[in-house]
Image 1: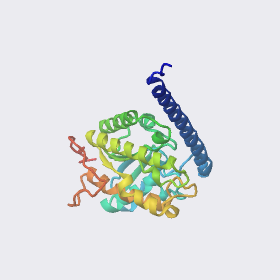
Image 2 (image 1 turned 135 degrees about the vertical axis):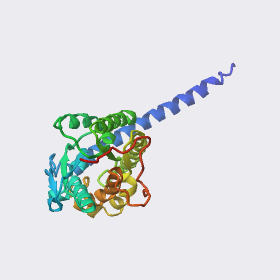
Image 3 (image 1 turned 30 degrees about the vertical axis):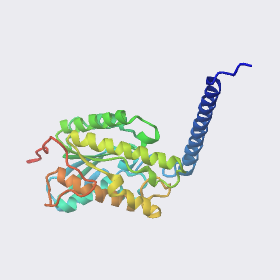
Image 4 (image 1 turned 180 degrees about the vertical axis):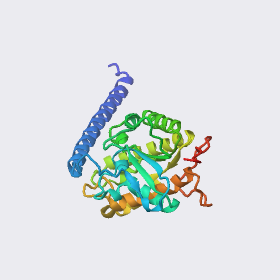
Length: 288
């Protein structure tokens, strides 16, 4: 009797392995889909979709012409989760700068809750054509990760915004994507995947922002451990957006780079998570 070709069992084994792998992929995708739905239900929209309006001149008592600060980006940049406008990210940064510079700071928040990096263009378009900020802070990226925007696409929108801001004559500080691994309402393994994706985006943002002449700050590095170790204090009631204390810590992490961008060096080198831009000189703010 003729023996069956050796290739037949080999092919059968390979086919079985391929089918098994395909089933595993489908099962994993379904698991992640269910976990994403669970995370959305846990987080909900307890805070609504509108952050407090913090646009005003902070620390008028110092007198003199105010420094113009612009904040762009997503819900973190907008300050969603703060219960008082003085506790929003923009207000915290403005107050920190005013205290350091002994000068009033006029805050303009163009950030919009739910924004991806692609929305930065519309946020800039919404500004008055005559508006000329001295410094801009951009915090964006979390929604790019959750909506699975490709990293190169996300980064290209950020660089375009940085270039437009430089064209307005201001210096730029970029707070890179926070570590989504700190979000306890997101179950595993989805949280681990989000953590990895957010770190990859943050690294790409830092490289691109620095090359474009902005000052990148790794929020995952300089403030992320606080959110991981103290979630009850760092997050607001939805356990997704920062609390007043979370915003205070985030602003404290950003202010040193804002001061460097403005040329207010304190004689100390940038610490971990703070980087200098490449190639471009600081915008001259004299006489403004």
